[in-house]
Length: 142
Ligand code: CMP
Image (cartoon, rainbow, N blue to C red; front, top):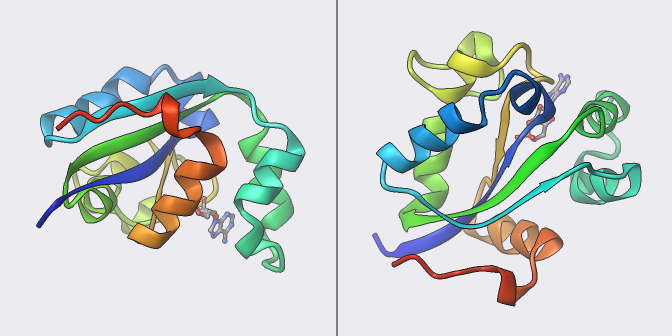
């Protein structure tokens, strides 16, 4: 599998619990490299635009409120098979279903406060990366 980039967010519950380093450590131990990073407080508009595909879901308001409730770390991760690898490392969306050792099993509190977001496909990664980063803010690591 070729080298690729994916998009990751360390969500407010994990930044507030001081688990940024623990989560990046899991990425790095599994050969994903940080190609870009921004620590940010999302506005309501920015969070709504990011999650626009969920706008008709009953949890949309709760999701936007949570994602704007504290700081987030926005990242581009790069590595072999990065989209799939990141999803494996994150574990299931609902931490109750996440496998042992996954980021969500370790650091999520609930399906909403689930510690991390990761792109679900190469196409989503492209959209999500360009939603937060300019090309000149991303550094190739391989
Ligand atoms: P994420 O990978 O960021 O993509 C969409 C998010 O919606 C998801 O992680 C969850 O945090 C959130 N989500 C999904 N289902 C629910 C739900 N039933 N209640 C609250 N939040 C949810």
